[in-house]
Length: 217
Image (cartoon, rainbow, N blue to C red; front, top):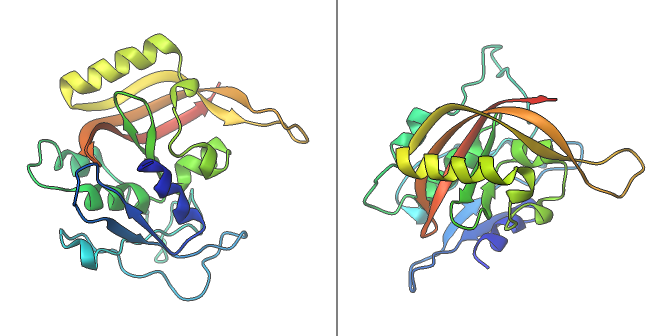
């Protein structure tokens, strides 16, 4: 229901993040449409704004090269850090829009926001979706448990809930993979290094993930 609306941004100019709390306004998120070649359609993307005024909130999402490490000046592209996400820990006010901007605006690292209780994917940036190959509609609002072994996932969920912030956590998990010409989705093993933070998002206790390294095994 709520997270399912997030998938619409891959084919629309705007999506709305929906609150569980009755009578709370939707949070609009504007994105640039992207051609299949990966180039942005039309004009340059708007400047990203971080604000608590949801009516003026228009985050930027640059989808031209999901694994690009150089900006236009030739310097290293800044990457999202756990320290930035940590500012949302125990936040007393509604920060859904800003959390969404952090996740969707990251161009180099896969970022996820996942419900800690249900393991449902509430948000994933383009890097995360491209790395897992499946169409967005088959990832967003779906249970991510299939990409984990049961015990490591249980231990991680408990660890993040206990410590709130977890740096450089390593684990073996999976990404979706399909052989050329096949219609069958397989799981391909990877060794991951990930930063985690427990945050409140869309009225749920969630795990914000920043994938720092993923090596195919």
